[in-house]
Length: 539
Image (cartoon, rainbow, N blue to C red):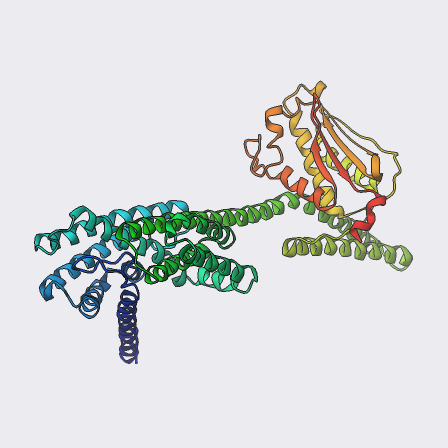
């Protein structure tokens, strides 16, 4: 059975390999035929040559063992499309030279990129552009050199022929290879297909098509004069669609150049200038697209980091919330056990029942905390409820007392202030207060015990808002650090991640409030939350 399975697997692999070979050869010849425009010189060098990109990308993705197939496709295409002007021997030699050059470029890119050959960052794009430019230049020099040695460029400028060959192949690879890499990657391909479901994307490419038409039809026979106009829609596409959008837009421009050249006679000098402009346009779009993709990945990574940091910051608050009902459950359970051990269950039936009701209440409270934690990390939702200011201050007192077990800090919470309730997520606001109080204790940790002081207060301000002030006797925040104080990953603590204040400000702003640092001699943070007059924004 194992032998039979192996034979079947090998047969399928051979069939898939044969299919890929046929598909590549047909695509190469078709692409070479489609780009066979404005041939120059005895060997019909074209100003745009995308087939090398197909060869390079195929060997990048599939491996260098496809080089013989590439050689065969080049050899056949030269005979079918160009009628092998140098004869079969010269055609075989130049085909071998081109195959070796494309394989060298593919090998170099595989070496620098590793298993993942996607153009995911500007470093990879620089490497791709540099390797392509240098590799194609070497191929151009060798290719034209072989023809020159065999006297096929009599009366032609050697430098002009090399430049013409290099520019045509370089532009072909720069325009076509990124598009092929995007098409070969399932993630990028799906993103590109998804973007076409947005009304903006068809509009973008419609504008680009109209712009291409304007440059080549309404430019009085001088498309290079107005070519800069094409940068505008390309930048729009790249900023909105990233690398995938930029690759497609560059291909649209190149197709426009091809159709424009077909539309009338173009001088060799003008055509070279036009292709140089296409190269500049393509690189601009690709770099913009890659930078947009990098920014999006960095933003997503920051969001994930903030969510993980939020888990760590909320862990303390959650532990405190759950610890209280668990401790109460344990105390009530011990009380019930004592009643049973003393045989008082019958005589103290009512008291036992009340104690059990309290246990059930505490268990429901613990379950509610866990459920809210689950909802928060699943969707980031909050549960607004009426919370009294005095209750928040009492929670702040408990946090401070827990941090001040040694009693070396003069900790004070202003109480006795009755104010209307706030409509907030109690758990999240308690987290903010807990973080600010902990920061205040850290700020006074290096002072002599007699100079350590932390206070928490609350008062109503304009608009019915409530302002919580967390002050300490520490040195305060340096003026140079205030601008970046609430930026993620900015921390003065050796072991801090610099996310506590960023998360706290995000929570405050999500409630329609604010969190700021006061410009005072000592440390002071001000947390402002909407009062009852602003309740309608939460309804």
